[in-house]
Image 1: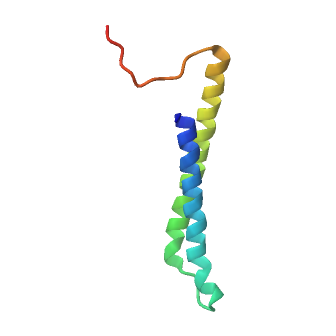
Image 2 (image 1 turned 90 degrees about the vertical axis):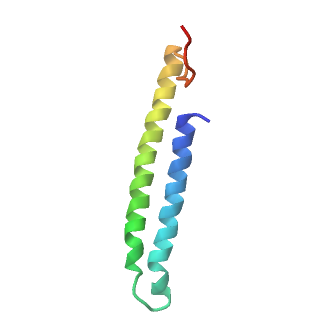
Image 3 (image 1 turned 120 degrees about the vertical axis):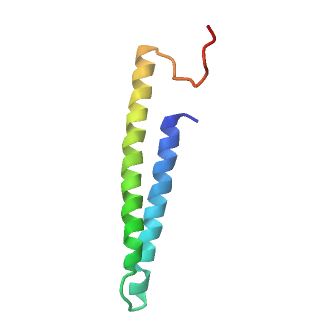
Length: 82
């Protein structure tokens, strides 16, 4: 898996957490209660994480496209023995 695909997976995970935390935030309202404000930091953190990972995924896909256009190989973690 490339880092671009990994960032896309991370974006989906953060977005899932954001949706889940919104449900936690507003679930008490359906029973006539007040919103559960303790879930608000979780919601904001998940939204910020999704936005950040999404921007990184977009940059990685752009870098992958530029490398393909220029014919440059993908970066590797292998070490060169001289």
